[in-house]
Image (cartoon, rainbow, N blue to C red; front, side, top):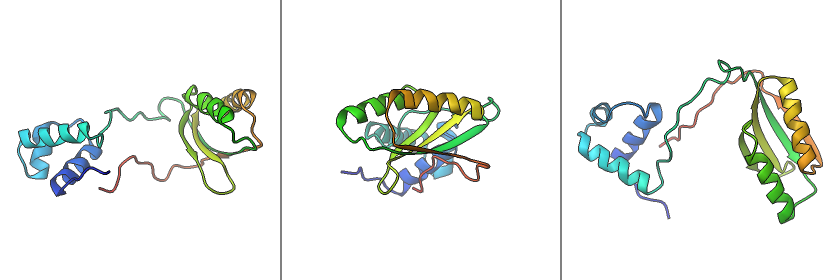
Length: 153
């Protein structure tokens, strides 16, 4: 069951999504409240699991990770042991930023961030050596037009 949130909670969440590093005073001023009630609301939303871990966003290109591939995977294997091995292989690879199981013709899509095409090939070779896949298609992102983790609260 979803936790109920009100308009003030939504304002707080929007403010945190823009910049969670701001002071409570700044956030309280933005949402039209005072510091203690804002802190209590944030604490309650953390306890309810609405707010997760706070992290920082790194600039991939500034750190040399210039290639982003979307990897489409089809498999003929669907048993529990294959899925466990596949999940293990994905979790062990920091290059995999996202992994989704899909409905339709493609079984999985991965977002893989690497330095270049050669680094992608190293990733690909390692993955297919660990798990059997029927077909893999890699699509190189030529330009990131929009990327956000913000939800439309």
